[in-house]
Image (tube, rainbow, N blue to C red):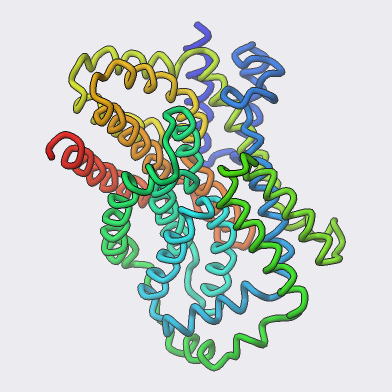
Length: 429
């Protein structure tokens, strides 16, 4: 009964999030409260358990980066980059979109996709405002590109870190096995975006001429502060790249960076905190609690176990089920707690495989499904929620279905291409 109750509450909450009849923060708080009152979540453990509760590493990573971005914003850097991007693309909408997508996809494997979106999204909003074009399509395209690009490495997408830890896979393993497919899938997505977003490409010659006449260097309001901020940001980025070497969580690196950034900026803390997306952080916490209810009552484990038992000894079928099953489920549940719940089940399945290479293929299928499933809906991945929060704050609201109608198409194509890659590389050759 508890499993049905938790699943029912989750589905009702998801319905209201999808239809946007009620503010999504209110929805997750009420739904999380209902699960707590009914005893469907593990009491106080939801605040302390890494695998069945709020993932504080994600929350504090977001908070730290929001503070860092808030300080950098005061220097005028984002306006500078916006003018530079507009001039480089000559105001051509598709060229601008490809440029922003490429920057996002290349940065995401090394910074992680959430951090990349927090740095690129403000620039995107400013360049679109300068050119008087809608920012929503560009933000959506960037998020989709970020989730694709982030799949290439161990640190690019949070689910990969969980999978790597559970399966004993290294940074180089991900680079060798995931990156080739990611490059192909991203290339296809770039070509597809010309069709997907064709109705959004607006070219305004007068606005473009006005922007081309601007001198981007004048946008920098405080060069000395900018230099200090860039040094701190550089240190944070290096820390992200080395976090697996020194075994320091990215959230700790982000928080330390945020503290140093405030110190070097000599700004009022209250001014910086006003830049933090508090509704986004609260929404994440509530969403983690909802998924914790599904994990604690055995809903996700039951689904996973049933699927694995139905597969038998057909390991290509198992890889297919893991890829497409994770793509579908990952589109409805935040992919971080989903992967945390499913990883032990996949580990048990891999342990039964006599061939080590085939066993690894199952892990790669699982990773592809979880990563690309993050593009499926507006709440499927952390980067999606962050981008939608930034869009709302800057007056460019993105609805659940506005994001999802593009995300579903890209997810389906990405999963099919990944499936072909898995079949060709691990079962055909």
